[in-house]
Image (cartoon, rainbow, N blue to C red; front, side, top):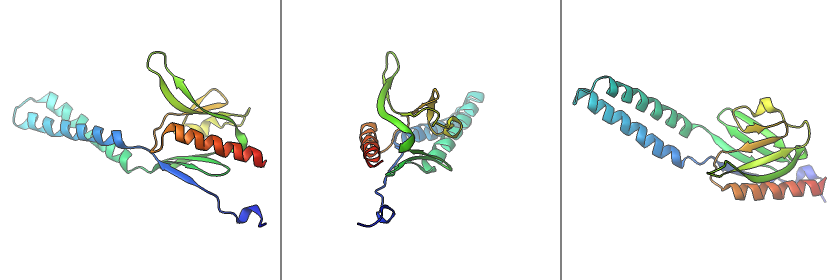
Length: 166
């Protein structure tokens, strides 16, 4: 049998879901167009200027987010979260548990949560990529093309394989 480093690693990559951004972009562009119409043809003045500014900013940030390269990559030894030029890799050797947890009192929000071993989470590196809760847990609220349940199952399977190998 060949050494382990000759085996190809199976990677799974899923991109961030951008369905909601297209609707937000449409509303931003609509606000921009109707505000221009209100300013030049209806002489609405200052409220229309505010609408033009808000619509343009909304459209700009939506386009920026749409063009940004955001994805979730699962390897055999861990997983990577990338948002634009920032990324972080979490290794399975540092992880205790992967689950989906519900947050909120009235309206429950499901999020992927990862619990780390003691003193294995770098909170500073997580800033802007995931939400750190306490000293040993992160929560991933982002939505990807695959469901949270599929990602959670794949992560738990790979974590179990990693622990069985070690």
